Length: 416
Ligand SMILES: Nc1ncnc2c1ncn2[C@@H]1O[C@H](COP(=O)(O)OP(=O)(O)OP(=O)(O)O)[C@@H](O)[C@H]1O
Ligand SMILES: [Mg+2]
Image (cartoon, rainbow, N blue to C red; front, side, top):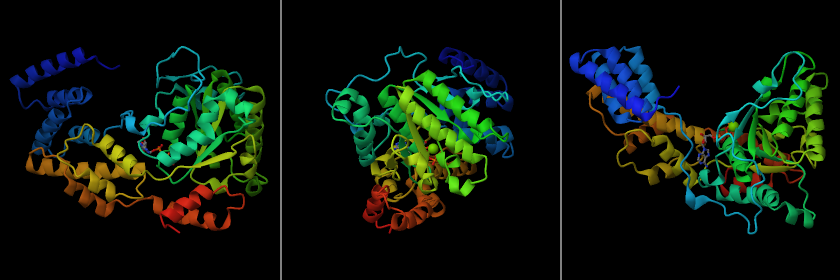
């Protein structure tokens, strides 16, 4: 259970009093550091850790805490007001009319109507949350947002207008692109924009080793979605389940894909307010039946983070760490093609360098641009190999123009 700020302060005072009596009581000091970290007082915590590690470099507890301090879990990103896509004029209110309960971002388990008979609890397969992330939180990526708005969000926000113009509201959206570039993040933002719940599905968990159970799991997942409407049902790594059926002619997996197709069609016919989003790094491996009209019939290419996105991701990673006057412009310039995950790793490597220096000299120093320069010698963009594979597709498999966005990106960036 989390302490309140007042409880944390009381603990801090008590532990400082203990240390006043015996300044070498490392147990008390470690406890104090832990509370300081929880309280967001990272510099004070860092100073304490450096002191312990200077005395005892092999202290496992101090090393663990140091690791926790230099790799903070990124919290919900700071909104970047300048990047918000304005809602279409005359936009309908959010689809959800329910009271916001539970609060934004809260994870909730909803009862499932069809539990698989083998005892697998479908609740373990689906995470249901009221989504607080909005498109404004996704930094930069203007062209991705514009396409998202035109292909998906504007019609969904203006259901009546879209219907009047005969715009089909059936079908879902497939997000594709190199790993670690924000597909999951953007899917959450779509749910936030629509005022819908976000159901994220772990397909690896849904694939059961027992014959037939996986199909029941897929059915249970969609039943959960129907019970949670309006919602975005997000199927991550959809290639794991939606692989080409021809390649698995004699595999039980074939039935799972069939079940997925049946469920997607029925979402369209008997469910209002269930929007299916899929994500994959390998769109070319997905069974074409899954991409037919009414299913995942629209594709959105999620590019590596652009300049504003890179700046926001680096800043987010530096939050709570000791930083001096970092040359952000140069870092952004030097990290073209880096994925969000690569940038996080780079920031961690730079922070580690400054930390080791601080331990060596027993003096806290800020993370500098030079730490990044050194880290950049080892950390390389991981998107290159993805683009290499994508180039083949762009050249040979674009029969139905599905990959036009990808091709124009490759041309602009001169990757092909
Ligand atoms: N435009 C952005 N603005 C802010 N943060 C971003 C942006 N793009 C990515 N991130 C951050 O980068 C990290 C990776 O993003 P995410 O997990 O959504 O990528 P992904 O494409 O789903 O990756 P994978 O293919 O591994 O599933 C996340 O921590 C996310 O918050
Ligand atoms: Mg993801």
